[in-house]
Length: 318
Image (tube, rainbow, N blue to C red):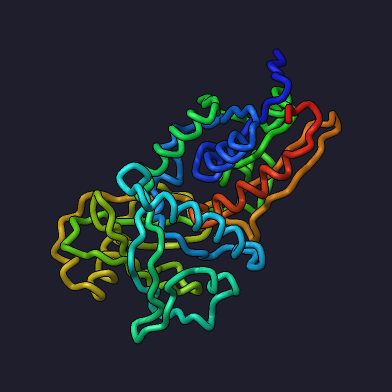
């Protein structure tokens, strides 16, 4: 049965990329339905450490502008942290220097070189709270949320003149796009011994990184970046290694009680794909996926670009 509703846009995928895209389209006056297999609190986005920072994502020349668009949103939301889950928090990127960053860094207030690394005051998101905010804001804007498992993008294209594919790792099968690959991230949540600042020491040549983020529910310790690993089960040996690395920076972490473990699969791709296709029937399919571990960082810039590719589609109301 064809349930085509003239003038609607269907966004497929309910993580931070799908939510931000749906909300952006609704803010531009579009009628939007969002199809998601999982509730927002069970998407990959829900387990993200969620510090704003362009990390392991290309193309570099586009990532900067995308990231800055998101940064401005988060800076506004940080005025209401309890409601939005966004706080501006001080921290250090160990081993990083200003001279090694792109031109986008000039637009980030307060970045400065120190003896420990690059000091910064950046958005840190409590993702369960923030994703609930996005869902509530999208619903207020008129986005209709539908729980739906999509086995083919043709299902959405049969139901609306324009579809935005925000399926992340699911794009590997749905497009299909075999260049989309999982990068497994494992985190440990411990009781916070009083750490107030975040810390990151990332080696892009290694699958192990060291970071900790103070969140309302505990101190988030990380992490890993294991390519082509599909396992969602926490590995006890990996968890122990994460705690050891973080405790080498802040020794008091070693004695803290473990509150939980998180595992997520980042949807990595050689470059982010934001692209428009026109089908043989004249329907428009816009892709917005492949953001790796930087989905939170680039979400709003990518959402605006993807929404712009929907403009002018026949059958859509202005």
